[in-house]
Length: 339
Ligand SMILES: Nc1ncnc2c1ncn2[C@@H]1O[C@H](COP(=O)(O)OP(=O)(O)OP(=O)(O)O)[C@@H](O)[C@H]1O
Ligand SMILES: [Mg+2]
Image (cartoon, rainbow, N blue to C red; front, side, top):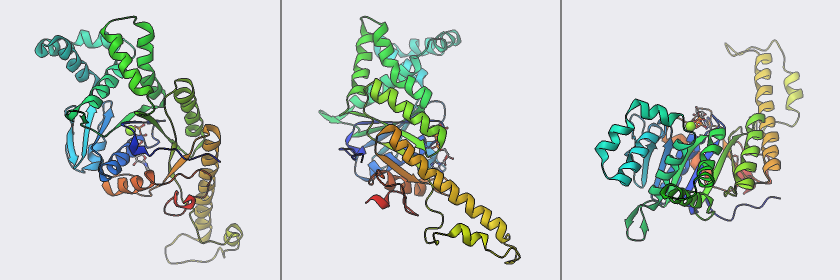
C-alpha cells in the first residue's frame, strides 16, 4: 500500500501544476488557489502563457488581470506572466532605465532574435516567480503564503522546469548564473516547491504522467508527492444489482415511455457509462502502479468547470484524503470511499 504524503498541499510555498494538455491543469490550479484562500492563506495564482482563463473562472464576467494582477477575492490574487513584460521588468531592474528597456524589448528584430533563443521564456518566467516568492508584506513576512502556477502542458512543462539547469550548466559565472542558481535552488527545495501532476484516467495521459514523474521527480529530484487524477467518473448506477448487464438484456424491446428513447438505446447508454467508469478505475490503478505515488481522484463534473461553484467542488476533493488503496470512487465524491 502506498503511504499518503506527509504534508498537505497547503504547506508548500510554491505549487507548480502541470500535466498533459486538457487534463484540467487550469481548473486544478484555480481550485487549489480557491481552497487555500478559504483556508486563510494569502494566495497568488499565476497563469503562464498567452491565455487568461482563471480570472473568468473565479470572477465570471470580470475583465483580464494581465501582468500587474488583481485581487479577485479576499486573500486571492491572480496574474498572468507574459515573458516579454517580465524581461522588460528584469532589464529595467538591472539597468535602471525603464523607457529605454521598453524601447528595446518592444523592437520587432529584438523579439525575433529572442524567439530563436530556446529556454529564455521559461527562465524569465521562473525568475519572475522567484521574485514574487521573495516579496514581503512586512520584514520577514512573505506577501504570499502560497503561489500556485498553472504551468504549460507536460512536454513544455518539463522544459519549463529544466530551463534553469540548462543555463547553470552552460553559463560559468556572472549575474545570470547567480540568479538562475537561486531559481534552481527554489525549484529543487522540497520544503518550498511541489510539482503537482494532473492526469486523466485514460491510456495516453496515464503513460505521459508516469514519464513526467520519472523525469521531474526521479531524474531532476524535484518534489512530487501525489498525482491528481481529474474527471474520474463516479459509478453511474451505484445502487444497481450486480447483474445489471443481464437485466438490461432482458428489457422488453417494445417498451415505450412517451418520447424517451427505447430500451435498446437506454441500455446502450447505460453500457457505455458502465464501461467508461470501469476504464477509469482500471487507469486509476494503472497510474498508481506506474508512479508508485498516492492518487487524488477528482470527480467528473457533468456540467464541466465553468465558475466558482464548480471550483468549490473540485477544491473540496483536492484538499481531502487520497484514494490510494481504493479504486472504487463513490458516486458524488471519488475520494470518500477511502476515508
Ligand atoms: N473535473 C472535471 N469534470 C468535468 N470537466 C472538467 C473537469 N476538469 C476540467 N474539466 C473541463 O475540461 C476542459 C479542460 O480543462 P482545463 O482547461 O482546466 O485543462 P488544461 O489542462 O488547463 O488545458 P490546457 O492544456 O489546454 O491548458 C475544460 O473544458 C474544463 O471545463
Ligand atoms: Mg490550461
